[in-house]
Amino acid sequence: MRKISKNALMGLIFKKFILPSVLTIIATTLTLTAVFNHFYHKYVFEPTFENTVNSVSSYIDQWQRTVKTFDLSYKPVLKTLIDELAQQYGSKSIVSDRQLTQTLNDEVSRYLLQYVSGVNWYLISPGGVIERTDYTKDLGLDIAKAVPRYWTGRLEPLNPGEYLMESLSFEYRTNLPRIFGYKKLQDGWIIEIGLALDPVIVTDLWEGLQRIMKANKYIREIRLYSLSFIPFGEYEPVIAQEKDFFNKQEAENNFVVQNVGSSLFKLYKNWIPIAGQSIDWSGKSAFFTIRALTTLDFSKMEQMKNSVILVLNSTMAVAVLFVFLASLGVFKNISNSIVGLLNDINRFQRSPLDVNDESRSVDSYIREISDLRQSFQQMKEQMRDRIIAQNLTNERLKEDLEKYKFDIFLDPLTGLFNRRFLIKCLEDIQKRGGNLSICFLDIDSFKRVNDSYGHDVGDIVLKTLSVKLQGEIRKKDLSFRIGGDEFVILFFDLKIQEAEQVVQRIQSFLEQVKFKDFPSLNISLSYGFSQWTTDSTVSIEDALREADLQMYKAKFEKKRGFDSFHKGFGDISSRDNFYSQ
Image (cartoon, rainbow, N blue to C red; front, top):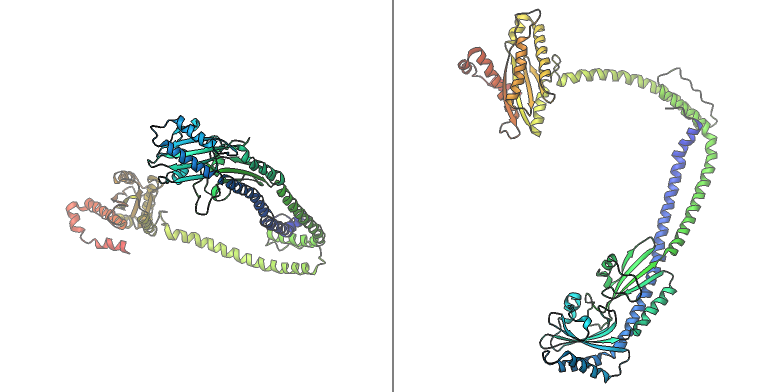
């Protein structure tokens, strides 16, 4: 570690004290901002938002009540016109369209109907299609498909002779205000009469909404559309996303709110007519739906909120700066003594065993730091003694560890893995599975080699075989010396025929090896193979036992021939006992 200067100490103090303090103050500022935002939304924004929405909603509701009172005076006349037309109609194959139109016009002329600019009749088939009418724009209109909820919810359920008198609504294709009446005939056809009204009766609605917009600084725009999204006025066409919001069920029961910015909102609402308490209009709005899209802009309120938050944060920042400057002077008074002590600590850290290291720190006038330096000197002496003792212990442990490592899994003579590691490998392979060729091999007449040439020569033979084993097998294969002159090779993912070729190369090599001081010494091998896979019905230990038996069979065939093998190989239990240990 480098020597600590005064500037480094100040950096350390900044990291350990000033920076955490600043972060704490920042966290507190963020918390206060979050709390302020919560109270702002709950007690300022949400009430303002609700009051703004209610001002628009209340006005449209009041307009609907006015229209309800207005169209009550027309419904008795409408019913009379339907009855006259139904009586004249009689049979649709006899009365012509011109006769029906003339009858309807004669009846309308008897009444002095204010705001009525025209009247039309319609004959609707039982399937919901307008088959006959004097209003050619609607001829062939399939009501069941155009407004299915209105057809299934209002017209189709009518019983023969039953009337349906609607309130003021807007024509599906033209948006013109109308009052419609229906009567279902005995043959299932429906007679419809529509009174075309002068648009002046709805002018108050648009003018009133304009006044509300001007009076409320948070309303940017109010757009009104019919059920078919035809605008009432010079409005922009409805885009696909806006249609999706209008078609949500919440748009009929309540407002659907779309947040299009940090302070910009769009409200979607489908207004249905105000009817008697006995009628459930839920899900049955059709021609008479007014779709209102209100855009609210609270950017000014958001700016005010941000200004208040900025003032709070600025005040907090000034307070943090003041605390920092005040603390800086205090820290400078004690920095010299602390720097000296830290440099002593760094020198000790670099050379803990350097007994010639003397403290070069200036004297401290702070009692606590002086006491700390004395304690540090005592600690250095204790640490030196412990480090020396620990180093000696570590050296002994390293020596013991190296020796122990070879004793556990390696054969010290050949450097191959030992019998203990073989057993561990077999257990692991048995658990995870695999495809394995096992070779058990033995040096022929190895006891004679030891007896005739000495154990030193026997060790040379074992090492020679081990080196050749390591050189011939693949990196993924494993070789073991499990005792005396017995060796095991595990060939992974290799067939017995291929593995046997490897062993034959090793055997050919040993047969050609000439030992310099012992020219008469010849070495040969006996070996046996077995195969084990995950799907084998025997255990991997049984597979190893089979390779051992095949090796002994080969050895005895060399010495006595196949018949003698059966005579001399009766006691196999001694080989079994080897693996059961």
